[in-house]
Image (cartoon, rainbow, N blue to C red):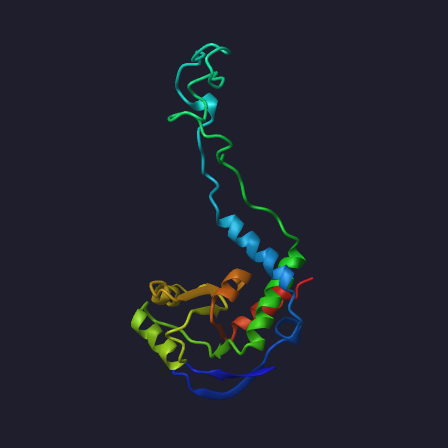
Length: 210
């Protein structure tokens, strides 16, 4: 699959680049995508939720009334979860939600996500560019030129660039990241994935590594 390389004004540079079929042309594995996205979201969870069990609630442990003969239920402690101010029954406790996945499965998931984007024509190739200073207006001009200013975009750079990152970080539908940080969730979350020309070789080295 070949795509035209565009400049920052959105005009065709006259050059074309062929996308690597081992990445962008594979048959997507949706289950690998599901597992990778599940792990990504699970790893974002703090897991600090907590509730008080009976041993943590302050209150008397005195038996409220005798066991039999009252006509009511048995009540052993005011700290029971059936009373107002009592403990939480089977409440949440702090835990770690993260889990591990095989490295090759994660590679397959990213390849599959990129293959989906390629099939749906949601990939844009942009020539290499630099920004002398951080300026959101200049970055918005690039998005306008590419006709993607009203869509969720992911700009993939060959390496972290502070000026470009700061120029787009305040835009609500825009995300900018280095190729080494590319993940399945962000690929799928974007309506358009914009690859800066020299980022493709970095991605190929990462995703085709044995």
